[in-house]
Length: 138
Image (cartoon, rainbow, N blue to C red; front, side, top):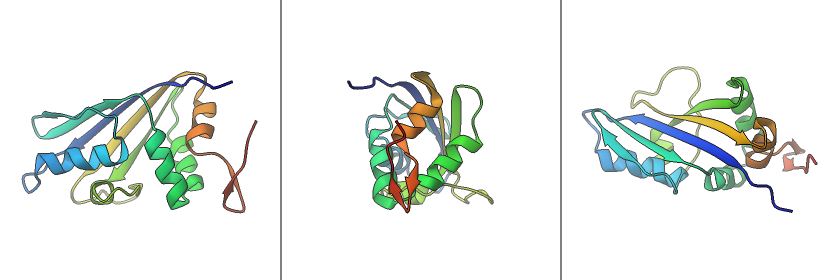
């Protein structure tokens, strides 16, 4: 049986005077290809309903534990959020922005999980690992 995930992913990134808006949009699409970016004054916003490609990148880069830590550390009810470095995203890589703010600004991502639960969705996107390998938590 396939689990149906219902999530809303809200993505926001500032566009600095030194940046080209389309490159910021590309950075978002590189990690969230199903997102639909819209330019607003000084920023790009987008909405998506899947993190499948993002999850594939987490697996490929072998940063599942880092992602889980970021997701759970920011949990608020059925929502979690995190920030990504724009330059890495433009190159198609996930690099969580922690500590000092990035000089270009960050891509802010807010995920609200409707079904089944936040924990189950995080397990789907960034499963637990043992010895650096994903393990089935069911």
